[in-house]
Structures are given as structure tokens and as C-alpha cells.
Image (cartoon, rainbow, N blue to C red; front, side):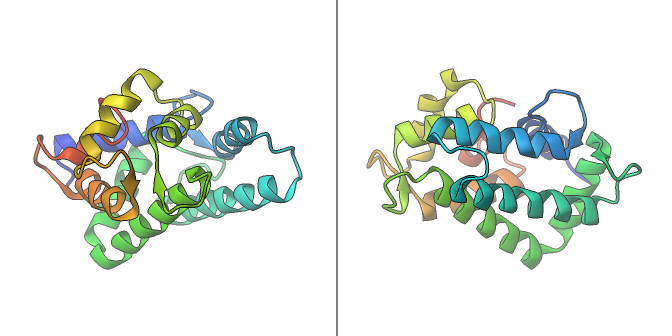
Length: 181
């Protein structure tokens, strides 16, 4: 059973994916995230970049539908989302692999200059795309940048994502990865 802390964190994650703010996840939410990213990057619909990222989000949506066993195949409710993450937490290796894939995706999409790390500006872009209030971006970035080099490396992001997904310690740095919850 998910702890109250993990429920709160996964509810935060749910709200990030609920881009259309309907209280349920639909494919249109994933499309909206892609549109947000495309607008930020200046990608036109049907461009190579747009189609590549849309394909990634389509796979994520399909995987969620397959694993979350939604009552209605067109949408995933919060309870199904929480059950999905609880089941994944029990499959430690599979979940760690999913976290690593998510980390790679974050870097692929938001690392504009391709240096393998995220700057504060790139981190702010991440917040914009996922409709997280940007007012929190700098504070969160400072917490996550544990070596204080003004960048978030893949290793730092991965370690903080593990905190976010696995930790029941309220003070774990990664809990605030996506702003307050």
C-alpha cells in the first residue's frame, strides 16, 4: 500500500500529466504536453521533431493504458494511476528501468544544447511544458543541484527521481523535484 507521502507525490505527478485539467488522464493530455513543448521549441505539427516526441508520448500513453487497466480505455482515473504506481513499485527492477527511461527522455527533450545536463533555463522550460508554476523552478533547481555547479546532470536527476518515487522520508531532496505537493 502506498504511504500518504507517496500518494501525495504521485498525485502531483498525475496533475502534471493532466495537461487539460480534467481530473482524468486522456491521450489529449499527452498531446497537449507535446504541443506545449512544440510551442516552446518552435516545432511545427508534423515536423520530424514534433512527430518524434509525439511518438514517445503515444508509447507512454499506451503503456499506461496497458498497465493501469483503466475501466474506460479512453481515460485513466487518479485511483488507477495510484494503483499503477503501487504495482510498479513492487516490481523494483522494472520500475528502476522506467525511471531511467524517463530521465533519458527529460534530457533528450529539454537539453537544448546537447551537453548531457540541464541548465536553470532548461529546467524552467520543463516546468512550463508540464504546467508547474515556474515560480518554483529556481528554488527546486537549487535543491536538486547537490554539487552546486549550476547544472543538473543525468546522475543528479536520476538520484532525485529515485528519491521522488521510492523515498518515504519527507526531507528527501527529490520529493520536491516537481515543486511543492
